[in-house]
Each structure stands twice: as structure tokens, then as C-alpha cells.
Length: 112
Length: 114
View 1: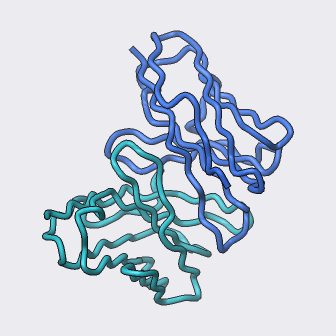
View 2: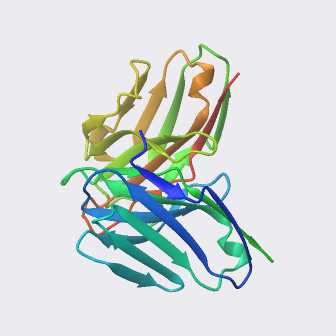
């Protein structure tokens, strides 16, 4: 079963624009992570945000977390063609296992 | 740190055959995870190990699936009597098992059952 759902399922933007994708989840969490997956490859960890954090930055990435709404957003600023990939949020299910359940993903296409 | 290695990268097998995949995690990572991903979907959790102990198995992991991690090093995932529905990408990931660290994924093994 999928814990999280990303929205939109697909997003197409021009190079230089910002891309925002959202993740909603069902149960309380300790941490939420975002991953990127290029076509046919493994996933790459982008950023982790804890449940007591509201916002986190890493380079051109900005992640927000609203635990009251059980939602998170990933913003990629000044997008590049190389950002074209699928993006997944992942939430831990219970403390101590560090087992993460992944969402359904947002497929981002950045047009040059 | 040479990353997580998975072999083979691709496997085509006939229905009913057995297949085995191998995952070599990052050496200092004590946790190892197996996920399955079908086209257009997110990875689905299958099982995970802390050192050599298999701590949890998903109900997705039928009796035809078995995973091992002898001596807490590499891991193998075996599928017996493969079915066409087993066709998927099988992903292995490892982590330090600390809350602040994410997973490091391998490139996956793509299984096609014909």
C-alpha cells in the first residue's frame, strides 16, 4: 500500500521556471524524505525533514512540512533540463524501524 | 564508499523458473531493504534486515519469495516459480539506521518473466 500520494502526477515546465510538487500522507510520521529517480535507475535521496521542522533548504530545493495537514511540498527553483525525473516522497511508518513507505510519484519534465 | 551494488542489472526468465538477485550494501550500513517497483508506481516495501536479522516482511512477499542476509553483509532475494506478475524492478537500499539519514539505493534489477 502507498502511504503517500504526490500531486500532480505529472508536471511539464520550461527551463528556468519553478516546479512545485505536493505530497499527502495518511498517518503520523517522524520524518519525511524526498527522492528523485531518473528513468530506469535507482532512487537518489534529496532531503529529509523531521516532523518538528517546518521548512528545509538544500541548494535549489525547498521542502515544507505541515503535520497538521499531513502534507509536504517540494519546490525546485530555476529548474534545469537535468531536473527531469520522477520525484517521490517517503514517510516512516513507526519509530525505530526506519522503514519508509513511498508515494506514487510526480513525473517532472523540464523543457529546454 | 562504493555505493549499493545490485546484480544482475537485467534478468529475463521463463515463467516457472527460479531467480536470485544479489545486493551488496554500503559496508558500514547495518540496515538493508528490498523494494519492488512496477512501471509508473512508487517503490513498494518488501522486507528489511538489521544486520543479519530479517525484521519485517510485507504481505506482498508470498511464500515464493525469500530473502537472506548472511553475516549481515550482502543480501539475496530469491523468487521461486516465477509468474508474469513478478515482472518488476527490484530495488535494494541500505542505510545507517539513524533517523537523520536517508537510504542509498542501488540501480535495481529489472526482472522480466516471459
